[in-house]
Image 1: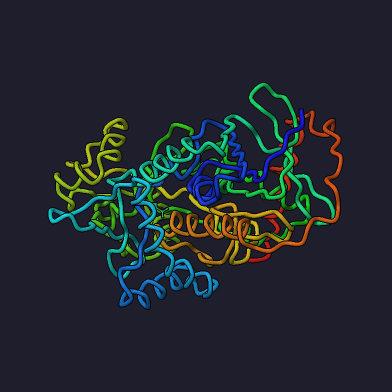
Image 2: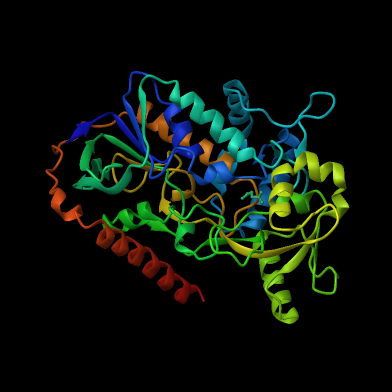
Length: 430
Ligand code: SIN
């Protein structure tokens, strides 16, 4: 069955949901997502969301973002995101998001690596769940938006470098097309391609492979972030994050003798490298993170989710260090977009981790991702609504759905295409 709508959004993370919320109700919007709507990585974010703390914070926040990114960041993007942050947070509050506050009702700010001051708003250690869950609730109440869960993006429909819609497979395995003048790819990075990742395993870089297939420009697919601290486990499966804000609040990293070996608040790539080096020197599969300096009260109130998970793994962080190891966490590269989230193909947008707008450079500053996703989701929506666009000359092309019947073969091809590009880039950059 072939269907049509005004805008198709792929993904139910903060980028996809916020884009939908920024579109007017007269537009018919379909959101598709590979699993249940709460199966997006945004739900897993722990630490928080950065915000510019007044004009006097601009130079420091800008410098922190650039330094963490090895100055490969796009300065225009950095400035845009920082200057948009107050308005974004205001809007989240309007939508019902609750951030932790101090006894006087003022925002409480936490700190993470490479930040020169605390500027991260948080909701205990489940900030992603609070923000994304609130956005999802809002989207579900919009009469113009439909969410198709367990619906997988198989391809985009393109002709003469213009996007005309998507090909999808639904929960029953039925393959169909959804015609649309605007398609927004907001379906995360590629953590599912890694053995050890904090990502949901079904987030496998499909949109990146589809972009490669259609010659849509991509950038820096080898800029992959390794988070320094995930809970060590010999069990397979998703790695559980020990938020960087735990170190921001005072936790220490220790070697096998109980000695510190690194400044815990350096940028993530620096700390991960130091941990690997230490693991090699110690002949160990992990190092230790000591949360005791935080005190019992902070562990229990700021980090209840992490506390419970550590207990499940047999460690009580109130009394004993926990074993931690680096794991894949984030993709700084992605589908190349401009300041309006436009890709190199007309009508095709990308935002969130799927995209590369240059804000993160070579290494993302902690807690800049939710903010960036929201800013660029809004930019995509603005462009869809306000950009004066010439009418499409070409009618939508016919799609032969037979080519999608062997899904295993299709997704193996997609994986191979992304991995090949990653390997090529890694070989080039050493
Ligand atoms: C964390 O809480 O350490 C992750 C936050 C982020 O990825 O920026």
